[in-house]
Image: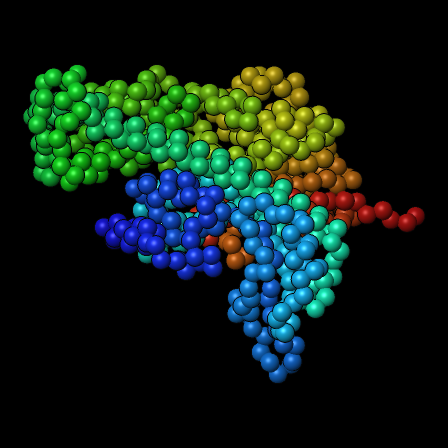
Length: 551
């Protein structure tokens, strides 16, 4: 109820004619459709936003006196010398910098900036927050994540295509007009990329909202009404009583109408409270689709009463959702093989086909988990140039990264290490389906025993929360000249630098112990997704290069 109150207050403020607390004082026009779509969703409302901007910030130069305390960055203040939420005109910016004398006697630093879209959103619960973050990340806003999950669930939609370049001071510009023109062109290109991602996010969000709306309407209309009536009949025929009298009342609430096919059926009257009780009892208005399987959350139909009519109930639910196969999510097994615990409720088996980035993944969803959040990282690996390289994937699974290396990056050869027999079965099937089995060697068992040595140009260590147990194996797999390690890990946002230093130091020491004289450096840090509040899934590209010694 508190969420609804805060949302109502925020919407009233948004609809006010008074200026808001932002420097501009109003919403940025380019993202009004996106803001409206978010705020029209019952589980979200926006608290602050910026569509993306090109600006020149004028900041007072802080005192260099030893006696004067150094102010924090936010306390420096400043003002915009130039700001645009659309494309910037290079001539106007150059004219502003080089032909307009400063009217302010105070010495200020001038910084040219591009800042992409950022939106802060309060969510009704963690589930809806995770759904929206996933949608944002898949739309290119890879820095999106949950920023608060205590009293209020807050997420930030953002990405990393920002730019910040010092230009000099109000007394002296340290760059040429030609360089300023270049900066504006680069910023305009980033604005194009920002708009493309924003439009993609809006489209994905509208599709998602439409899907939820359609399901909601179906559930509240004929299909759910018929399913619930039949479920009640089943309960009555078995002479069972509801475990919770309120839930029973909710299921039997409203006026039953025998004319199930008429328009009157869609007006089946349930009070808001009764509908909320139904939603709380069955809990499947939020679901996922895996191939052609509709997957209900682990919390759905959790009341023991449903178990007594399960065989008759599940086909009714499947019918209401328009699917031939229905499943319920389980917890991922805590075993080393991380088996899936998906339960098939309607259908013969759990084998599904999923196509992503031009690659077909086939797997038994009841035996193997599928990682949705690694989409951007799989795409990054697919865009590498590996045509003359040998790759070792120490945690191949069903081929999450093996296939992008082979299909997209055109790797010469991939060694795929995996110890889960169910994943191996799917991996071999996927290699055949994508016509790359002739360039992959599958090694079954513990990678510490099966991984090849001295052959790899790059090694993938895609295990969460940590792959540290196989860092020695990875170093041994690299060629004597060295190569690249793609090391995955879950890291606290406050400890990214510390963890990266630990990784680099560890690889350096392991290389020395293996007799290698390598220069070990961090080439890139990819922030894939937020795994949990303040816990980020990182991939660090570690470059190992042999140091030439004088003879």
